[in-house]
Length: 247
Image 1 (spheres, rainbow, N blue to C red):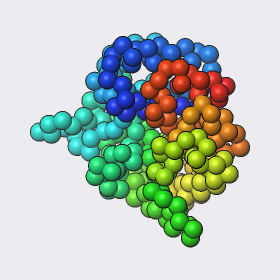
Image 2: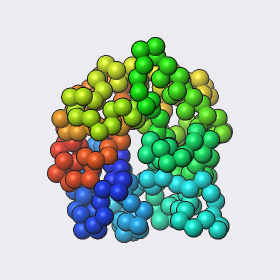
Image 3: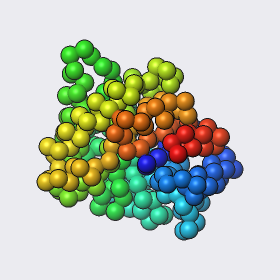
């Protein structure tokens, strides 16, 4: 499975970041999972210098720009230059700060142009009884992928991130049946958007209150290809327990 640890801004201390990095390397050696760490940008150069590392790295976001007079922006090219392999794009917290579907689409273009593997986040804010939330997910996928060439679309990893599930306890989070239905639906939409049979190779992750107590349940029989982990990835013992639950 692909396990992406999004540290967000939880970790501000380099010593703590190094501890989780070392734990992640050990987990990667012990398991068959692919572990990707997404630390705050300033920490990336510290870790990506370790060329023999068993883990890979992701940018938490990339700029829609290509460089120039853009103070505070970090471009896809800059992330690629320090050895980053993945880029999280369209995360709900970035959308809440103004990233529209059109901006997300532009960021996908920038990431792919630099050889980064995009992890495209999509998800509904709330669930209605009439299924209108399915339309919002379809629109997010359609707009984001429409700017890409057919072969580029096949490289995008989708992370299903229902906003209503974020911050909930494991018991209040999504059920395995509901997750399985959403994974099937996302694959159905991807089948329409991707050329030929390439959608069969598309990976779909889940992110939304994933903890050691519910990760095994969510993984079993849902068809999910991995997880986008937030808060639980910012604590070494919790993250280790979560990964081992999947093994």
